[in-house]
Image 1 (tube, rainbow, N blue to C red):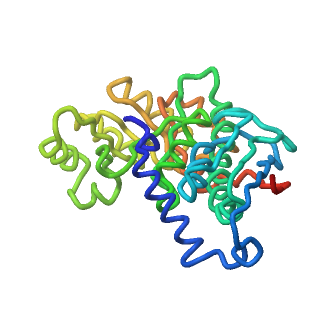
Image 2 (image 1 turned 180 degrees about the vertical axis):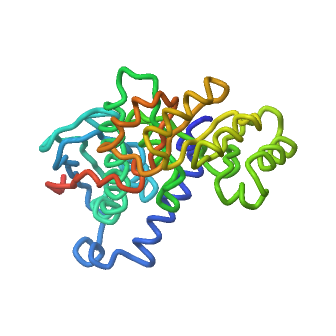
Amino acid sequence: MNNPITDVLHADELIKMALREDISNEDITTNAVMPEYQKGTVDLICKQDGVICGLNVFKRTFEILDKDTEVCFNYKDGDFVKKGDKVAVVTGDIRVLLSGERTALNYLQRMSGVATYTRQVADLLKGCKTKLLDTRKTTPNMRIFEKYAVKVGGGVNHRYNLSDGILLKDNHIGAAGSVTKAVQMAREYAPFVRKIEVEVENLDMCREAVEAGADIIMLDNMSVEDMKAAVKMIAGRALTECSGNVTKENIANIIETGVDYVSSGALTHSAPIMDLSLKNLRAI
């Protein structure tokens, strides 16, 4: 799947929504102290170590307010930056620099936080076959940005949304009546090119999913011992994914199970922001 952040029109729509949220009518403070055009510049300063991500979104936020705004970057997405580094210099109408500051930083801090946390977890998987996946546990209207940040941090995107892939979870199975019936109904409904993933919670469900012909089996909230037994039972007949409260603190125990993928909602729902700030505003 192409990363949705390359859909500039979609990204612009979301950025405009964020700007409208912050400027419903006018920036009354800026208009009070800067009633007329004055060209100026301001520095983007990193206040803690981490992986920078979202620079183009940061830049685009100012460009939407004024196409003549210029941003000169000293780093690119995916670079590791340290406290005190000057990441960029923004030049343009001071009113735009002031009004766009918070929205631009919100995107950059959030995306850099996700990329930094993902890098920390992905580094724990180096040298093994298991790949790190994200989930749909994203901030509303931030999914394209957060999933992009996961990729920048070294993770892999799971399905983007409900239209993007078949994942039969516990409630789908309950609605269908059984694992076997759910897989059969999905196979009959979906195009043959679609893979079918089934979430299982115990070894009996795992056995049924294998026999039903699932392409991917998600081992949800199972013990390490049961996951090992499930991988042995599946024996390569389906891809395997581990899910359920996966964090950087416990992922080491999961690696030894031999699963193909491990998905972690924490990459997006629990990553702290990275502290960045616009400083040294000056007229030129």
